[in-house]
Amino acid sequence: MITQLEAPVEPDPFENPDLRDPEWVRQAERNARKGARKGRREAKKVRKKQVETWGQRPKKRFRRTRAIALVAVVLALAGGGIYYIQQARDDKPVGTYADRPTADPIDLNRPFAETPAHDWAEGADAIVVPRAVAVGDFTAERVARAYEEVKAMIVASRLDPRMLEHGDVEPFLALLAEGQREEIRHQFREAEWPSRYATRIAPGFRLLAAEPRIRGAMTAEPGDAPGALRVRTNYVFAYAFDVDDPREALAPLDLVAMFRADVSYLLYEGERWVPRDRGYFLDGAESFTYSMSCEAMRKGLLAPAYSDLTALGLPDSRRPPEYFDHTKPIPDVNTCGAPEAG
Image (cartoon, rainbow, N blue to C red; front, top):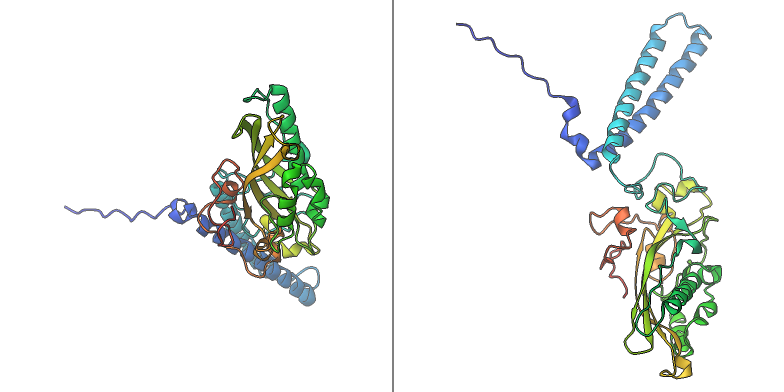
């Protein structure tokens, strides 16, 4: 009896496990784009040679056919690679690869488009106060007013151009209780800017006209004594920087710096407190920076990532949307590899 051998089954190229490897997919995309560009250059050289040799109507068509075939193969490979890359990324949130180089120049008119902040509200309107309820000795109406007062302090410390661009702290300090102003003013005079309290742009840099994108929350709770109310805030700010030559920015996050601030404001009110202590005290603050200049960050200032000479590395496998998520715990280490300031 003769046993017929079965022909070996060819592996399905579309089941290759490499196609599910994000790093392999990214490299395939780069190679495909590079190959496509090379193919177009070769095709142009062939057409130019045809015109020089035979004029506009070449006598031998096989040369043109070969060039067209070459371009078709390269484009097919590029198209296939891009298809699988797109398939691999379709289930990822927008901004997942915002820290990776992009093939197209960054659009300065839409700097947040490919970042996790692409659909966030912008400017002061993004700070939406919650519905107020009575808290301890404070009525719902007084809590509602406290929310608006805290919002004004956030605007003064994170959005006001006087603070951002010039380091003018007085409008912000005027919103604090008199009993704490000099203490905080002294901290702003230190060599390292206290970014946990307010944001300042590093000298030599400027923001785009696009207002910062913001997402976060605030809540109220009883303070540490009668006549005290604590308002906790937890916000992420995305600032878009301008650049003279857009080619300096290779990835969307090269221009968009993220700053997170978890700040607690303590309000003392009533006859229980001496007049100079009535008002708001900065009760505690934590901050975190991401996709920024490490050199500027060490001074407490904010500058875009593209301005650093060395590329930033991530401390772990987390992707940009996780860093932009204000509900996540603040990481212990920033993306410059240094411990976060409390």
